[in-house]
Image 1: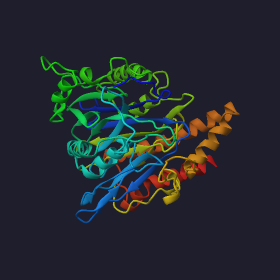
Image 2: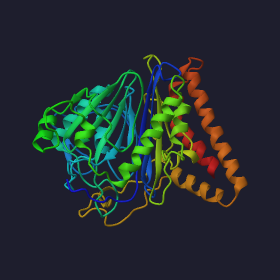
Image 3: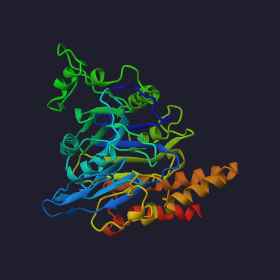
Amino acid sequence: MAEQDHPAPSSCDCFVALPPATASRAVIFGKNSDRPRDEVQEVVYLPAATYARGAKLKCTYIEVEQAERTHAVILSRPAWLWGAEMGANEHGVCIGNEGVWTKEPVGEEEALLGMDLVRLGLERGSSAHEALQAITALLERYGQGGSCKEEPTPFVYHNTFLLADRSEAWVLETAGRYWAAQRIREGTRNISNQLSIGTDITAEHAGLRRHAQSQGWWSGDGEFSFSKVFSLSHQPVRMEAAKARFCAGKELLQQHAGRITVETIMDILRDKASGICVDSEGFCTTGSMVSILPQDPTLPCVHFFTATPDPSRSVFKPFIFVANVTPVLKAMSPSFGDKDPVQKVPRFQSRVDRRHELYQAHQAALGLVETSQEQGQKLQQTMQDLERQGLEAMKEILAGGITLDPEELADLLFDCVDTEIKFYK
C-alpha cells in the first residue's frame, strides 16, 4: 500500500477490565469516541425485533441480509450514520471500535463501515464471541469501506474492535476483509488506533497467513505476528501518536489492577494529560461510555453514557435494559429522511443541524461557564453531584440494597437526561 498522508489527528480508546483486576466480580468496559469536534453524537435505544426470512437491511451505505431476530440495543453514535461508535445489548454484550491503517489498502468504494459492524454485532450476538462471529462473517462477505466522516472529502479507515460480556472479552483487528482475534479471560486490555495482536492469536481468517505470504509480508517461517506482518513500516502520524496513548492507557489500568471500578474507568476516560480525553483543534471526545457487567447473571448490567462532548465536562448517565424502555428523544438528533445529505449521491454536499436538545443545552452552559470562573466551578460541582447520585443508586441496585420498579428503570435514562437539561437551563 502507498503510505499516504492522512487528515489531522484523531483517536479513540477502548478499555476492559476483568476479575481479578476489578474490585468486584464484574467485567468493566469503557470507550471514548474521538471524532470531528463539530460532529453530534446521539444515544439511541432500539428494541428487539423480528423480520421475515430473506429481508434486506440498509446500513449506512449498502444493503445486507437482515437477521430474522435482532437483540435490543443501546447505541452511542454519530448522528449521521446507521451504525454506532459503541454500545451494548440486552444480553450484556458491549462493543467499541477504532480506526486503523495497515498494509492492506483502504478503498473509497462503499461497503460496511466499522461502525455498522459494531451495531450489527450487538444486534446479532448474545455473547461477545457470538458477536465477533457475526462481525467477521459480515466483514468477509461484504468488506469494509466508505467515508467515515460527514464531509465531501473521503476519510476511510479499517477497524479494530473490543468486545466484552459478563465472562470474557475479545480484541478483533482487521485489515480489509482479513482479521485476527484474541480472547481475554482475565486482567486488563486496551486498544488505541493501532494493531496490537501479536502471536497470541485465538482465531483468524482462514486465508490470513496465505494472503500475507502471497503479498511478500511474511516468509511462512517462524511465528506469525499479526501486528508485525500487517502494520505499515512507516506509520501515519495519527498511529504514531496512538502508541503513546496505548502505553498510557495500559499503565493507568495496571496502576489500579485489583481495584478497578466504574469510577476508575470514568477517570481514565477523562484523563487529558495522556491524550485519552481528546480536545484538539479538529477533533475531540464527542461521546463516552462505561459499562459494568456483573458475573452474577441475576444482577443487571448497567451502562453509562454522556451523549455530550468531553467527559471531563459531562455527566455519565445510567441505563438498564428492561421492557418498554422510554425513548430518550432529548438525546436523539432530528431525522431528515431522504433529504439527509448522507442519502444523496454525491454525498455530504450540504450540512444539516443534527444537534439534539441535550447537546444544545450542554454547549450553551459551557459557553456561559467560559466567561466566569465562579460559574464554571458551580457547574462542575453540580455535574459531579448529578453523576454521583446516579452512581450511588446503581451501586445499591447491584448490591441488592434497593429494587426499583420496572417502570422507573424504563424511564431511568430519560429522567437523567431531563434532569440534566433542566439544570443547564
